[in-house]
Length: 73
Picture 1: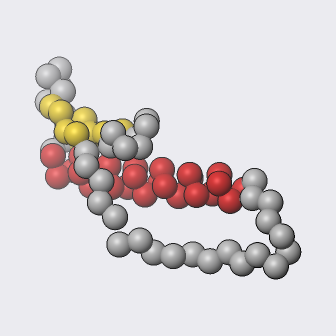
Picture 2 (picture 1 turned 180 degrees about the horizontal axis):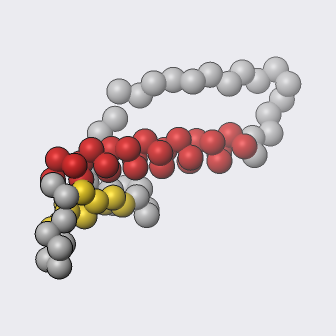
């Protein structure tokens, strides 16, 4: 799965700030563009993991329901 991200240079300290518009509140930063991109990848993975855990936490399903994990590439 691919996400578009926005990278901006912070004029005050020269670091790079990056966020993923598709995932509200998913931000990161880095000293270089490459570091910022690596960091936002981790932030996106953590965001999606948390989103999935929250969705599954309150799941009320019949006893015969099956829960499986799938990878999205």
